Amino acid sequence: MDIDDVPCRELIARLFALLTAKAEDAAGLAAEGQSQAIGSARAHELADRLQDIGQHITLIAEALSVIIGKSRG
Image (cartoon, rainbow, N blue to C red; front, side):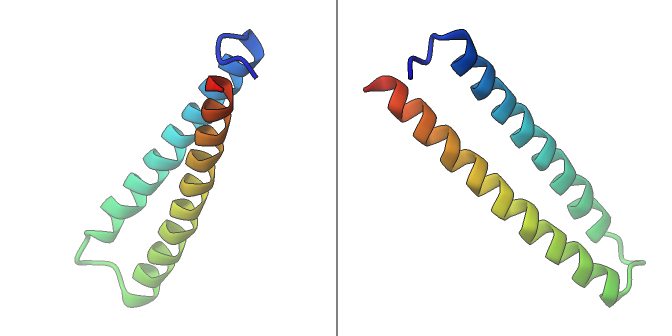
């Protein structure tokens, strides 16, 4: 896989866009969690959702590393 191929570049760009969206989602949830007005149930829900998003971010980043790594060699 050549990183300069259009399909490869498009895939990489889409994965980075997905990472951006996930990070923005996480930022919104984290900001909501800073409120002193939320209850423990909502805080727990936010923490669970943040953990899920973190796992998605890790998987996407690992995929990018594999794709970019394969394109080098």
